[in-house]
Image 1 (tube, rainbow, N blue to C red):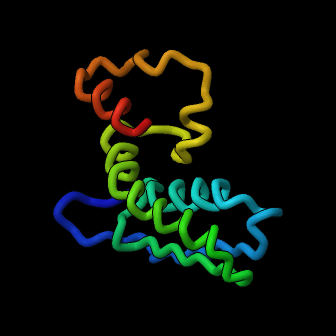
Image 2 (spheres, helix red, strand yellow):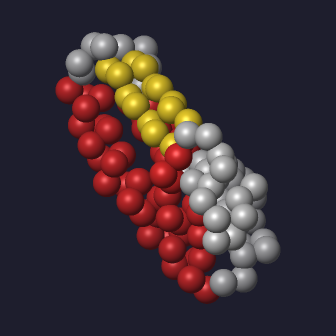
Length: 115
C-alpha cells in the first residue's frame, strides 16, 4: 500500500480505548487490546493509541505501565515475524504448531523471550 522511497499516502489513524472499572473490564484485556493496536500492520508514524481510564484505577495504570514496557519487545516481534493474532494472550493461547512455516532459528529464540 506504500511505494518504496515515497512518503506514505495512508491517512493517520487515532484509536481510543476506554475503561472504567478494572473488575468489570480486566486490565489484561485492556493491555491485549493496546498491544494489538500498537502492533497493527500500518506505518507507526500514522497510528496513535489513546487510553482513557475514567475510573482512575491504580491497577489499570500499573498494568498499562507494564504493557508499555512489554510493547517494546512485542511490537517488533510481531512485525518481524508477521505474528497473528497480535494480542499476546490470544497468540499464545492458540493450539497450533508455531514452528510450522517458521524455520528461522531466531524465531524460536525470540518467541521464548516473549513468554
